[in-house]
Length: 374
Image (cartoon, rainbow, N blue to C red):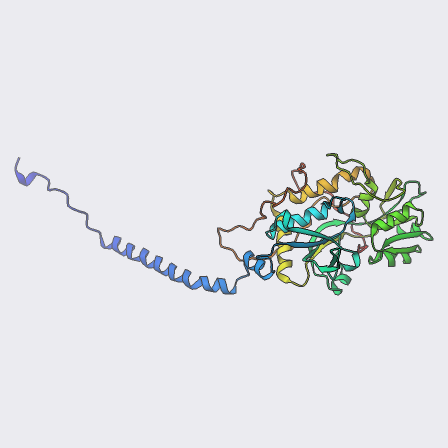
């Protein structure tokens, strides 16, 4: 065979004009995207909503060593201070949940007792005088009058309703406040229940603490007490055991069995957190509540409800203690990159005893009623 018939060795492939054109276009596109990104980043940083970190800075939470929260100290199941200075209750667990979101662990949270009339001003007693607390989480119903007094509320974290308790021996029924006409009835001085009792023909007695009202009921000085059902349920339950053996040691005198009455006349009592005038702090609290309500993996709220309120229902037949679903919270816009995800951090505290959470959060919803304004 002649050399002319042998194949010549293959040389290096020469790029075609089309291939070179494509390469040039890809390089140009990458450069253009890089320029565009460099131009957009400062714009986003300048005009977008604040990041969560920026909100923490604006709220004065960065570098803060202690979060001071005003709570009630005499409401079993809601917020109660025990003799060893341990605090327990639904409001306490919600306070820890919010504190964790703000970057504080359990040891950095300080609770101070706060009276009803001091909640709008956020003034609580530390034993030596009054101090301004960072947050008020104290069975504080959201209403316009309180906002006019200076309270700045977060979204609601619990829905309940107004009800009445009497001694078990009381000859009922009590299906409305009108059924208490001519009788002496105690309520918190700052609640709108006082005015409503007068309208119903009852004789109201105002006290600063609901435990004082219950004591007067035991002593026969009044015939009934009215305020939010979630508050009264703890006194009706008293020291009877929960599913896990939990009890509410109510240190009142001359205690007697109580009966809880559904009066069917008030709408949802919407409990909120008084955050004060710092808008960034209110946004952070709402962000914590929104995240908790919308994260199916998070059961902190449900655990708090189960540990403190749900098990009491057996001792309060006929009167719903509170709604079993966390209220929807206001959505707060925060700036984040696509790969970022706002999520409630794992609680920085042991929290409530573990309890089972139902598969879905939809549960009993209260009927539309008028407000007691606890």
